[in-house]
Image 1 (spheres, rainbow, N blue to C red):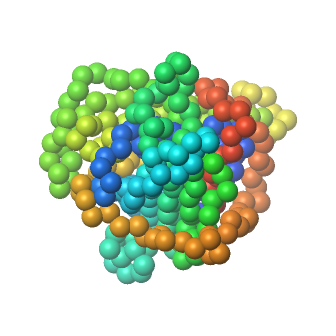
Image 2 (image 1 turned 45 degrees about the horizontal axis):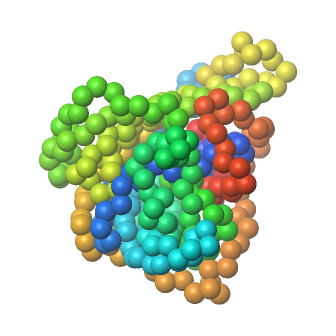
Amino acid sequence: MSCMHRLSLVLATFALTWCSTATSHAQGLLWNLPDDGAVVEYAGKYTNKQERPGSNDGPLELEWDSRLTIQSVGEETAEFEGLPTPCRWIEFKLVTGKPSTKGVEADAGIDPGPNGTRIYKVLIPVSKIKGQLRDDDGLPVTYLPIVKGYRKIGQQPAHAVKEKVLAFYPVLGLFANYLDLKPEGEATDLDLPNLGAVKTKMWKGSLKLQNQTSKSENVGEIWLSEDIPFGWAKYHVKLIRQEKDITAAVTAFAPAAEIEVEMTVVKKETSGAKSEIGEVSEETAAPTEEKTEKPAAEKPATEKAEETEKPAAEKTEAAPEKSEM
């Protein structure tokens, strides 16, 4: 099995299990809204250690490079909740793969394979990007509505998304919707590649999920900065997953995988954003059903989110490839 195919299965399994029950995630990657035209690019490493019980070779350890670009690519007034509403087109591009100087993502130094590039272009009501964990009524801000949007996976043509909510996790990153997210320590300077030192404040949170055959703990740290468009300079996530047979006792859970990812801003621009999806006609943007690949050994079961709430009647944008971290 190739490394990129293995990555597709890893990312696919986690999304399948997670998206069955969990809420979508609003403030994970959008903490403020810069002027239209702003671009921020992040670079990082994605590592995955998979346990192999009974193997003399020990755990399987894999590593990929990752690039995430967030940009504001247009303004538009659109109908939202029955009223004309100022909105912003935000485009996310995530590229994950092995280091390479060739191929369609050679400028990023990554070979993403056929499915390692994801682009989401979504129209978001400006008023919904609040940069806060709770709304004016004190309720958790657990989802980000979208008026409309488009998705492009690999070399496939762009298609309209049917969902009215964008889920960042795990579609665009592992930083989740931690309802216990809170600041840690004092504000400090963070030295960024190519950009120098910026003032940041680190926040930390955790998320635990469990069902009859698996449980996981996701611990995330994010460094927020007013000097960075969209609000964050760096995030680090460590996710530990355990598994057991469905008939085994709870005490039988054993380590199955350990995922770690860190993304740090390496470029920012206040203007010059240009959409990679561009204009999409209504004909070519017709929504399509996604076919997902699932490992034969995976037994999807509804997980109970210990620290999440799911907004009623909301549908979340699921990952095109279903994955488990």
